[in-house]
Image 1 (cartoon, helix red, strand yellow):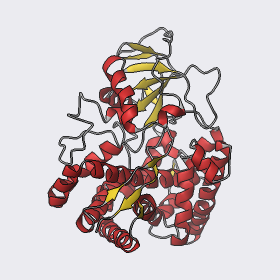
Image 2 (tube, one colour):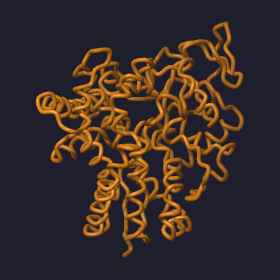
Image 3 (spheres, rainbow, N blue to C red):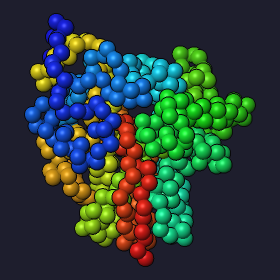
Image 4 (cartoon, rainbow, N blue to C red):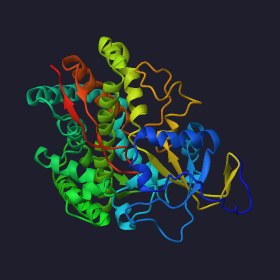
Length: 425
């Protein structure tokens, strides 16, 4: 990987399609067939623009797909070569939506570092340890209510509840608003899915995203204003009191923070719980192994859950200057997309990656990103929630089964819309 001097010419688009929503409507196993071929034969390939909320853009060159674990880590850990400030989404979206939802996710240092520190203090290992008892109590309550309810939709009864409660409690949002906020956060990343749009009576995905954004920003900014007058021990107070370069954050910046934390704090853990339930139903020997030694195996099992789920499918960077990855000449300004689902099944790193192994160690998965300055800030919170919900579930309902998941069509989050569960008590 070396820097070049001449603007490179683009190769033909690769015959394997990573751009269409049809590809992202396929199962993980079907997508893996494509990724496996690319990893083995063409690990860095050129593709047409991604189909997304604005359709397929005309007149744009496309993007480079990076599918090997090593190369994903290289792009992630070299922000001076591959920046985030020109966008991190796979496909383009209206600038006003991006500005109101991505916050420091789509920034580079020094601004990224400054803003990340404001929120980062709430997610340190020490701070998460102070929340452990609360998380365990909430997990117990959720599973107890599942037992009372009986069979139903695992996503609604379990998966979405713990992460929703925790992130909005940390932010200081009232309990009565949390369900509606979590639904709006879901919609913001679900607009590509035709079934979701039909359920909300909206044909235009951009319109649906706009509605979801407003549903998040209104309550979030209202609480921000309340905290200016009445500070409390919560994350929203941290935001309204914070200063960067001697200036307070604007409402737009606070709103973008709130939207980002709503999506990141809810979606990733929720979907990892759902995908884990599917995997433990398929790999029953691993489920029995874990249930028999929860204290010993939960630390490694949680890492395997995140690897298996790969809850965030893609992130994009933009080349800052002409460079190369594995002999492919990449021009300044080119989009470079990292495919975490592929990196997490790379046979150069993981033995038998298509099998769930609750004792897998080491497990350098990329479920929280490939490293570098944008590594998931909430990783410790997510790990703790996963550990506690599965400790309780496998203790009181070890014989559960789930059916076929209804998957969201998305090239961003690996989401499960619904998942039937039978407790078999």
